[in-house]
Image 1 (cartoon, rainbow, N blue to C red):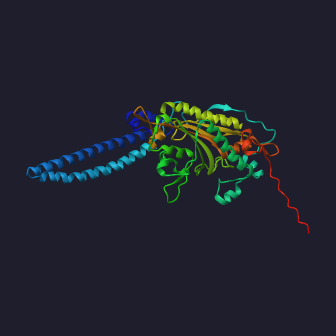
Image 2: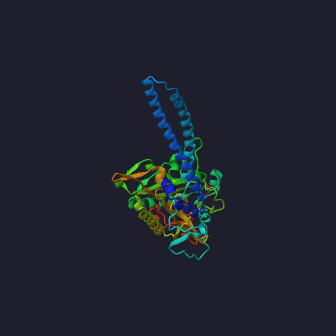
Length: 431
């Protein structure tokens, strides 16, 4: 959520940011009109309450002195009705104002390219795309042929975009998670397994829920939503709290499944386990002082770079444009892995600096030398395991249809190669 002072004192900054995002800058004027009306009503209400108190004193004084107070009493009877009317208007106007304030996206960082996805900027490329002596298979075809994945029976059991992982790929899923957990633990991140469901208030403290509600699953009849990412649950950890300054930065590594409707993405990356309704993810999340958030951004991005290098995946970092990134970050860098079967890069995760946008929504501050300020928050998809499995499978496939295991995962899986399953033929029993 933006600082209301910014909108009141420097609306041009917000308008320029909205324009960069391709959004209506006139919304700022609408908000300011509501804000002015709300402040005027608040002043009127405060004055009426003050007048009511003064009149009550005047009535008491008149009665003490034995004077008639009919005129004063008549005025006193009119005031509660006027107060009630202004309070109702104040409530309606305040709700409309707050709803608008919560809906404004974060201010776009100056380094972000202006425009749509075509303006995204590749800022780093690491590793070379492997040249195969054979036609590489897509991960779904490859994993199905090895009896490591079953999408058809999952569709029968749960619907489209669900899956059964099988055999060694189940081991790989857990191996990737353990690799990321060990890596981030060594970096001093506190491991966190958050609630898999959140209240509306908790979700809204991380994102403008109205804009994201179609992407997440609501629990029918309850004030609960399945989490789409550990980020939202980790953000809520310190909701309405003040963090002691000496504890900052707080660095969490969230380990959780994620559930997403993927509404509006039909026909986009729908094959296999790249874009699905449930997946596991290790999430980096940081609370820090405002002056440290740029360094923390580089730190968690370095972690992603190092993990991808260790996994041996050709990848690139892409600075997202103003119209392609989400509403919450001021700046986002995606990391994309190379998918040989498609001859292109696909998104594996992202790294975002959200400044004080989430901490204002969640009311999370830190105190230093008697002064309280909002913390900055940052998040980073350390590893989304199913997408990583897809990327590893394609890059490590061999001509005979088997999949080599990245060296860094072999100690967790105790397997070096995933081969086709040999079907055992049952011998006929002797008569």
